[in-house]
Length: 121
Length: 192
Image (cartoon, rainbow over all chains, first blue to last red; front, side, top):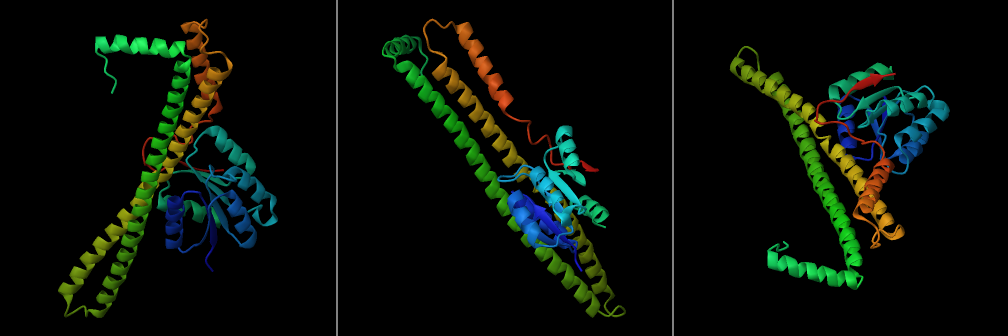
């Protein structure tokens, strides 16, 4: 059975590029436009990995990360941050909040798939 | 464009003096500054709209080309299966060449995925610039309105200091730049 990935980004083009890459590799993809939308969708779907942006309206990726880690199902699910932010301070915040990894945009499809394959199993 | 010929310049100065006497000069300056900032924001919004529109179109084209490539790839495979190896060797060779081309197109499309992310980077940088402009506008309005900036007793040096303070205050209010990338190369990956 195909594994499901929740892809969160307020940029339509990024969501489309992520979905294109992941679907091409056989993953099921659920798209969310911001942290709030992702949190609602995370409660309704059985997700195997979350890939989220940070700077988003309504709820940012770090808040989403914190709230997801409070949910039982998401305590051990890999959560990867895919963002333009590359500062050490921001990375430390993500790490402290329970992020599995940090990917700086723009992403390379092959490398993204390699990282996902590594952490999803 | 303003004409700066000497005779016109002196007449312009006398007009300014008249405006200052009537207390209209500050009002006009303030309105001009406001209009100036509004124009900058409009320009930035326009750039964002144009980039977003271009990216959306590029993504549509990308997805269509990708779909066509996949169909082409599948068709070549199907034809290859139909051709008999002994009798149709020349056709097989042509199909193999077609497969090499299809693979190369797929590879190029994969690389395009990285480049097509420029829209998101540009949008974030523009949003950051709009915040900077807004912040500076607010600080300048604050010193203009509350600190008797236009008081005749205020020296140019004092005015300069106040403007410098406003720029510093605006700068502090803006958080770190959200995009550090200078090119479209793949970003770093770190697993915790």
